[in-house]
Image (cartoon, rainbow, N blue to C red; front, top):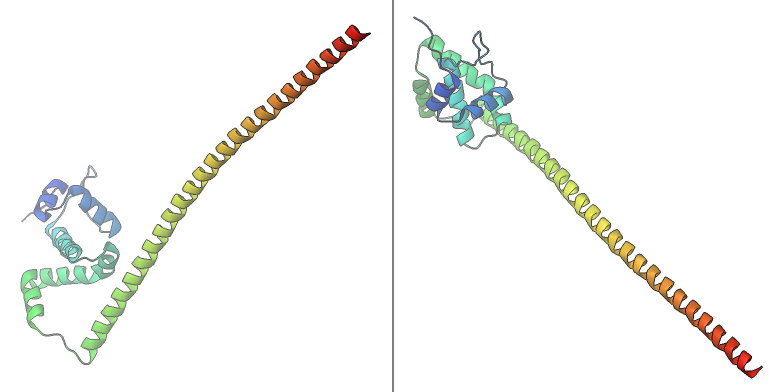
Length: 192
């Protein structure tokens, strides 16, 4: 029996996500999605199962970084379902029905998972803070640069106006001096 293969548009319809989302997940999670001889992606049933798990985790609010770290477990669970020929849904239902141990190795696994989540959250927050810091720095520096340029323009206009005023005053003084010299010489000629 031939293996079912789905092109990206069919896979995106089955998963109810846009094709670009599947390409993005493939890249970010470093999934090994096979390609045909033309280089086009095709999705097998196992690929769709993995992507369904990824979508479910995304809907629960997990970031792709966290999902990428959990991916080996998802792949292992998917292989287990294939090997035992047991539907994945049955395994999940059984695992939900079995209560988690609170003592012994179960609690250490829970603690390890909590520590893992805490590390992922801290890393994410640090990255987001760094990105915000860089964005704020760029915005503030561009605003400061704009304000400085605006201030320089105003000062330049002010100094030009001051320079014009000084030149006008000097010209008026020179004209006044020239005119008083003429009057002085005219009055001397008329007396002399």
